[in-house]
Length: 228
Ligand SMILES: [Cu+2]
Image (cartoon, rainbow, N blue to C red):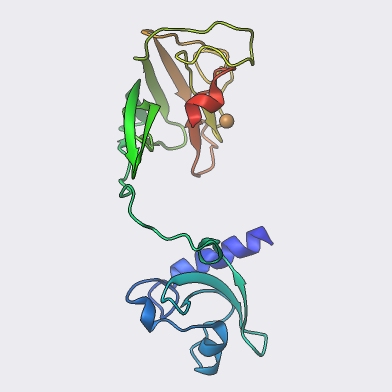
């Protein structure tokens, strides 16, 4: 079912220019229900449509046009929870590092940065002072030379593995890449302490499927703390 919904969502993106299948324009111009779309003969089948409530707030729904009423399922919780976008940070595309001639050479500093979101200032450990962190664009068979530079400072808090500890020591772990778990590739037991750096080298497999993957710190005892 999840696959089905994702498929339909992608389908709706593909048809984004079609009426009611995107959110462009005024919410007041949107229909109030799936039934209204169906009765007006504007149906594009069982996909995700934008409709609006009586307060002219738009929200996405999945309409099942095979039902006489044009039945619907809530897609996002925005409507029910009355969550509105009242400001906050404007999304900015993260920096991109693109491999050149089969190699991506990059330096990733780990550093503190304050982020203000409306009234709240969050102090965070970041890659490159950015949230979200930079995107790496690599291809199958590429080599990645990654210098992880830990610019965090003492103090340390030394406790056994998996207790909350070493808040300023770090490392990097990737998801979805078929690479070795041994140094200098993706060994999650590498410790890069405050003021230290580490040179990772990843050899991307020739059969690596395309995808969107994730990298994050994975030091046991502080992973959650640093990922947040
Ligand atoms: Cu992970």
